[in-house]
Length: 297
Image (cartoon, rainbow, N blue to C red):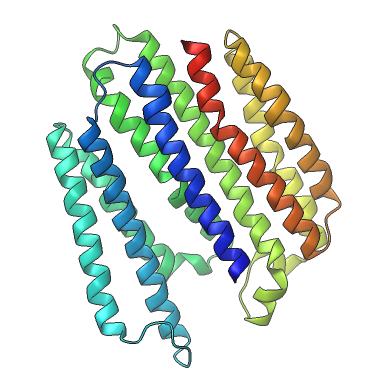
């Protein structure tokens, strides 16, 4: 369980790093008239934090109800009130942010995140594969919504006059999609890594149903999708020579090494090492945002 918490903590650090790099390294130096001022940006981060913390509280409540003999939450009733309060604060802040940039409908993204968290924790986390898809979307939600809220408002007003901003939006969204795919594969790897623990607690996953050997081969084939996306990205953006060089040397080569290790993985230790390799690839993908800044500058 401690190892799982370390995985979750690392993913949260990756999300924070990506959100900071997108805003302060890529967008702010290159783009005028961003959708979010600094106040709104930090309000956005705080709102996301409150909603995600509400999800953590709800997860503890659900676990306490599923395992009444364990002492996870002393008072489920008080925990529910705390969960509702934390969500209300997060959604309230998000409404302030959305209305202040005259895009009130963006408030729906935050409301949707809170709803998805509720459905995922109470129902969807028990649905095979779908739970992996939703969990990875929850992790990567902050990337997508920040890119849209920072770049879309001015683009909607002056789309034809901002080809550079349109290009930046497209590239940023492509990076976000790649990160989502990597997190999706990471959730499947974690299932393979903790297969024995899931069997012990009678939790179903693809790993517990088909075993690690089949799971390793299937995940390797699935892992080809991000590789194809990376190659397509490089072909589409041939003019970004610095970024393509970085991706080729520090993303593609480690990814090929990851694929070779994953194909033959069988034990918990194997999947632990492969998960660490994928973590490094995610970090290197996130730092490509810095390289993109230097290339575009």
